[in-house]
Length: 341
Image 1 (cartoon, one colour):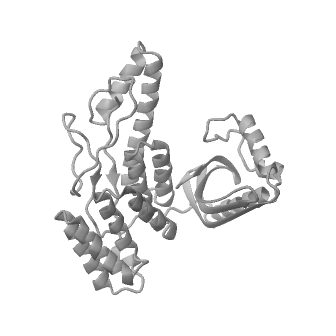
Image 2: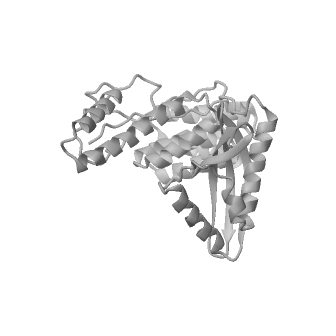
Image 3: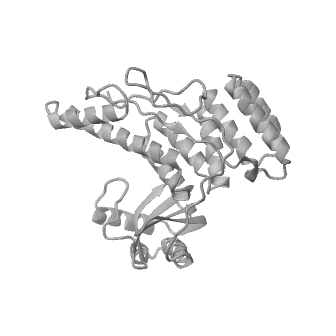
């Protein structure tokens, strides 16, 4: 058994900034009253208060976010996922909905999907500390699962047992015994203010921070080269999509770096052959990208996030995508591609 990790739900900041066509007093009153009801355990009353408010202001981000938190309290997980997903779609520069989706997926044991959501949150707000904390816990959970699988294959591997024990102590949980799948995350039954991590003797929980009205972290933007890099990265995304849609396979593949890492673990050559077959198979393809956002990750890397609408005579889908880009003196190449929700 691996240790269970403490994941932290985000708080949506800048309450008044996202009210649309609503007096600030009404906005603050509705959300604050709903939050007070949550604090007293009246989740049904809080949901009704928010639903009544949203009937007149359906686009309000604060009320929608609080509604997602209440739905989690009512164990209506799928409804909460839809609420946070829709909010992330309508307000892609807010990191908090991505963070809370990651918490839900982590609770469900889908750490890969949780990781992608947290990376999307940090692409919009690199200084968002809660997402960094949760991402560390996700990586620890992924490592624990991998070490457990290794231990199942080699029960006498003392090195793996030692690494598992380190992760267990780091996360404040019981020392892992190995050989079992990851345990499910425990969910807090109330919404306390942030508190220190629970001691090892107590089961860790998914803690939720209370509502705050401080300014939200500023969205990340490419720095240094400024607009030139942002423009180049945006142009790359559009050209990449156009090459895909026109079935220009060689042109499409030229956008990927030699060390591109396929998400399913395929080698570059195998992945490339697979992509050739999948692009050539349909009679026609349409790929439309929108809501492109570019963020500087570090001195030599960027991340482009965008909405992708794919259609062909075989299938169609819509997703929020991300491309990690290596910046080699202005020559941008894709090093990783993944779906953020």
